[in-house]
Image 1 (cartoon, protein in one colour):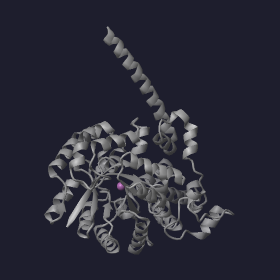
Image 2 (cartoon, rainbow, N blue to C red):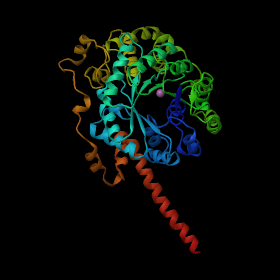
Image 3 (cartoon, rainbow, N blue to C red):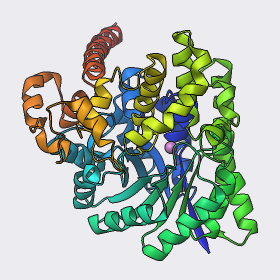
Image 4 (cartoon, rainbow, N blue to C red):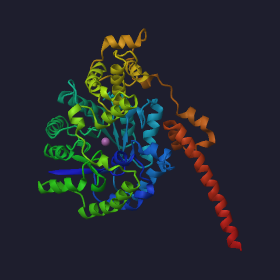
Length: 463
Ligand code: CO
C-alpha cells in the first residue's frame, strides 16, 4: 500500500492560520528542502495567496510563482482555483479563465485543483479543459457538505462526470473539517470502486476529526492526503504531516517522504510560527479544536460570523432562533454547500428573517442573484414559490452565467496600455483592479528609486 502527501504550508495552512501573510522571503530558504522531501505536490499558489501578495505584501504573485519554481525545479507545484470565479467570487468570461490557466502553467504550476462552490460542473469545465490543453493536471475537487440531498450517489455521479471532463484526479474537499472517519472511509471506498483516477482527501483539523478521517481515508485506499508540516498544522489548518506519516508507516504503508527533510522543514517553520504568535499575526485560538460545527451543522467560521453579526445589532439573544432558521434558508436555496460565499449568504438571510420577524421581508442582492441563477445551479431544488416572489417578472437563467459575459482580456489590455508590463499584469488587474493598480504604482516608484540608486553608486565609484 502506497500513499502520498500534498504539503499545504505555503497555501492553505498559511491562509487558514495567518490570513496568507507569509511573505516570499519568509519561506524562500526552505524551498530546496520542500523540493527534495518527496511530496506528491506542494500547494503554494492560488486561493488567497494571489490577493494577499498584491494587497498586503507588495509582491507580484506571478513573480512569487516563478521564484518558487526556480527553487523547486522537481516538485509538482499545485494551486487552487475556484473554476469560473478564478480566485474571487465573481464570474469571469471564458477568455480570461483560459488565459489565467495558461499563464499559471507557463509560470510554473503543474497541478490545478479546480472547484465550484455549488458543485455546478459547468463552472469548472472551461478551466479543466484549458488545464489539460496546457499539459498540466486538472484535479477535480468536490465540495463536501452534509444535507438531506447530499449522499454517496451524488458524489459518485460528480466524480464520474469530472472523469468524463478529463480531470487527472478527484479530490474530496472538506473546507469545514466536518467529514467523519466513517463518512471518509465510505466515500473514498465508493470513489475507488467508481474510478481508477487517484483519490485525494482534503480536510481541516477544525473539529478535531481530521487525523482520524485521514487515517480512514488511507485504509479505504486514498492515494494522496493533504497535510501541513506540524508547526503549521492543527486547528483551522490541516492535520500534521509527520504525525500521520508516523502512524501510517506503522500500519505498513509505503510513504515516499524523507523524514530527515521533514524535520528540517519543521525546524525551519517553528521559529517563524513562534514569531507570528508573538506579533499577533497568529491567534493561538485558531490552533485549538472547535466542535461547534459538529453540534450546529454549520462550519465554525460561519457560526462566529453569525455571533459577530448579531452582537453588532444587539440581538445576540436571537442566536438560537437564527440557528434554527439557518437550515430552513439553506433548504429554500436548494442546499448549497456552506462555503464562501454561500455560508455568508445563508447566514445573513437567516438572521434577517428572524430579526425582521418576517421571512424574506428583506433579501440581499446576493440571494437575489442566487435565485436568478447567477452562481450556478443549486444542488437540489430551490423553493420555487419563493424564487417567484423574489424575482417577480424576471425569469431565472438556465445557462451558465459566464455565457452572458463578453470577452474582456484584450479590451482590458488595451485600456491598461503601458501600465501593464505583461499579460500577467493584465490578469492581476482583472482579478483585483484596485490592489493591482496600487501594486503597479509602487513597482514604478521602486524601479525609479533603484535607477537613481545605481547612478549615485557609479558617481561614488568615480570619486
Ligand atoms: Co482547505
